[in-house]
Image 1: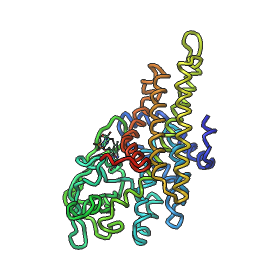
Image 2: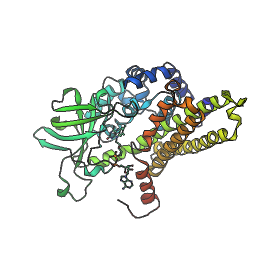
Image 3: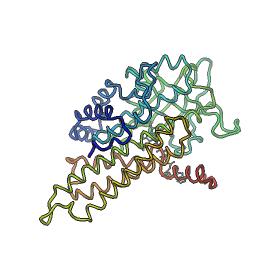
Image 4: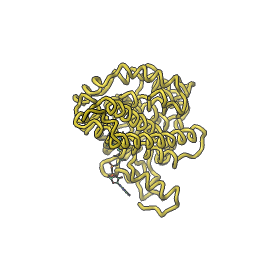
Length: 386
Ligand SMILES: Cc1cc2nc3c(=O)[nH]c(=O)nc-3n(C[C@H](O)[C@H](O)[C@H](O)COP(=O)(O)OP(=O)(O)OC[C@H]3O[C@@H](n4cnc5c(N)ncnc54)[C@H](O)[C@@H]3O)c2cc1C
């Protein structure tokens, strides 16, 4: 069935990603999952093949591909049973540097990010107290001569232990000095390889995600690592969210298709009461529903990517794409476990692992409720609810 998934084109890229992913079996992922270990070989292979540099312009050593092509890469990784969450951020976090960094910063960092010499896949936004309410974050970056001194804490900073650089959003002016709560936040690029005062603690989660909490105790960042203008960081972060949502949406489509493929194959082969379980409508219909839901969500992901690539406003499409695709993958996951009966729970089948992994996308990088709020307020014109 996966041959038919190429509605958005990019057949060559998809084939290349699929070939690479075929070297990383369910057993590989299952074994890492049990040890809660990072898929370093997989990430190195993707980096070496240039896939994670898809969105970096050719002038900086990347392949300068469209977001639609990058989405095809992420979808194909998930469809192959792999987990792009280990490194998807290497693809898109650099966007804040690309859009708002100085020429000097771009020339210094982007070529090394493109080659994989530097990993920029840690994004320090969420804090224990602020959660979804980003503007209430408390980590401060105080200017002291030619550097900023950072004090505070982040949580859920994924891949921090497997990244050289981190994009940090911190408060450089207190909220009351500013007219808007969202002003006074700044984006800084922290080199974690030389950062006394930085402590990273892994958080064990229900899936293998390499996420952490990060403590800043007087961590110094050279002032030249400020991205864009001081105080405007909130809008710089916002400007990158559409790309992130569309790419995560594509990953969810890949997951959903993986679950559907597994369910179809099992339903055809598993014989109970003398006939394949797939002959029963009670088994067929949930699979067919998951398929329809996934195809509809895939169209929204493609529409959002197309709008993004055309430079059109795409906030509504990106949000809807992420929500619908996350719903499609979660429903397909549940259906797949049900179709497999008891075997859906056996580690050996890989389904319970994927089930745990895809559940995340109802909450991160933005929760479903907040997407619904966005649609209600910004698309339908209803009063702001928070
Ligand atoms: C595994 C994992 C990896 C992550 N990786 C990163 C990362 O790399 N970098 C990073 O910065 N963050 C990361 N996050 C954080 C993630 O973006 C947040 O968990 C998410 O935005 C929700 O924030 P919260 O957990 O504080 O929930 P809260 O903001 O506390 O919300 C809790 C619940 O209440 C709901 N809610 C809150 N306010 C409203 C409202 N006004 N109306 C309706 N419902 C509401 C939310 O939808 C949610 O369901 C990660 C999270 C996880 C779990």
